[in-house]
Image 1 (cartoon, rainbow, N blue to C red):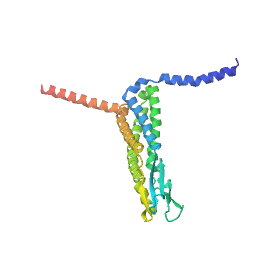
Image 2: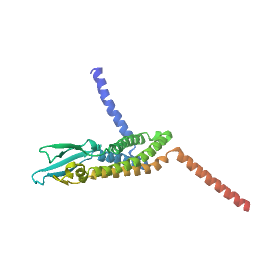
Image 3: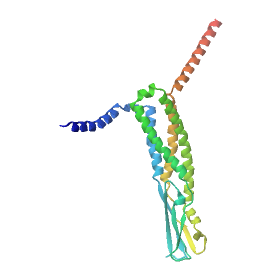
Image 4: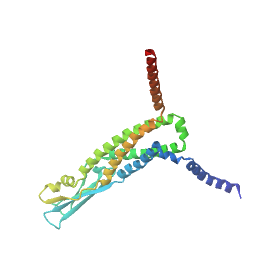
Length: 266
């Protein structure tokens, strides 16, 4: 067997051995601890949050009947979705005073900023919690011995807590505006043909917003998870140890003062 083949087989085995060593070195029981368990929930709910928002698509519509003719009915169906730049969504409005003529209109509003911020935060949360879980399960000794890692984890956790509150609230408000802009009544109100006497307009079915509503709910659940995790991460920082030491020192000084007072009374 040539040396090249031996080197190739060794190179093929090295990645497998590295993965096996990495998985073997993970301490899965730490997932039962509050710090590991909450990080797992944060990882899952981050997927649910950006997945529900980023994959949403819906449709709204209306019907236009020209000249009270039951045969001359135009159905308008408008599809929209993430990132909710509604001003770019086109639909054709029939012109009842001209044969076979339509006019291109757009939905109103741009709600991409809160939606994209919400999805981006969910993606960053997903990657951070995954990296933190691997570090916590595989390199727990470094996490406990080097106090910089808990401090960084605490600062990042507080930041994500604040951002999740802002993102969930902003996206909740943005979703309310999306619902208002995509109602069938808003669609008919924006079409000039519906304001004349030559056409009769009626709204279609209201868009289903269930998946988008769930994304907002997952946003606030993420906020609660990150806020609750602040305490468990704080317990790993040296600040918590200093606070405990100060509390014990104060308690000891009070006990010594009480004992000294008792001795003086005797």
